[in-house]
Image (cartoon, rainbow, N blue to C red):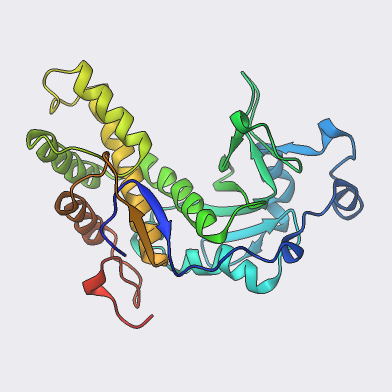
Length: 285
C-alpha cells in the first residue's frame, strides 16, 4: 500500500466479475423462493429494516461475528472476494468492538426520498438516489445492506470498508477518540493541507472558514475529526486487505502526516496475523 491521497486506485485486485456469474435474479424468482417479492415495481424493493427482519433467520454464518444473505446468485469463488477475504483482513481489535454483524448483498441500494427510508432495489436508482450501502440495527444485530450490481470487486471492497468504518466511528471508545483528536489538533496547529477523502475535506474547510480557534472542541471540530477518523480508517482497512494505490491531487494530505495517522490506527487496531498496511510491514500473506 502506497501512502495515499484522496482518490483510491486499485492495482492487484480482481478485475470485473464475470457478468454471467453475478446476474441479478428477477423479482418473480424471489417471489417463488422467498414468498417476499412481487413483480410490481413498487414491491420489487424492500426497506433495509424489512430486509433485516425478514432474512435474519436465514443468515449464513461466516465467522463468530459475521453472517450474510444474498438477494442474488453469486458464484462461490466470487462470494469469497465479496465476504471472506475482506472480513478476514479486519483487525481483531475492531471485530471485538462490533455488535453481531449481518451483511446482505443486494443489487442496488436506494436512498429514501424526503422522509422515506433506504431500500434495496432490483433496478438501478436515479444517480441522485443511488447509494453504496445502508444499515439497520435490530435486536442486537447490525445489518449492512451493500449494493453489488455493476461494481468492480475493488470498488465494492472500498464501499464495504467505508460502511464498516462508519460503524466503528459511531462506537469509538473514549481513549481512541482522545488520541485521534490529539492528532487532529497537531495537524491543525501545523496548518496541514489536505485530507484523506472528500467528506473530511469539506468538513475541514468548513471548520477553517467558520471557527477562529480551530483546535477548540466544538461541534464543528467533532464532526470534522470523526469524519477524518472514518475516512482514514476506511483507507487503513482497505490497504490491509488489498494492494492499493492512490491518485495524487491538490487536496492530498502530505505523506508524512497521513503516515502518522495510519501508524496510530495500526497501534490501536493491529492487523490480523499475516496482514500489513504499510510496505515495510509486508510479510507473506
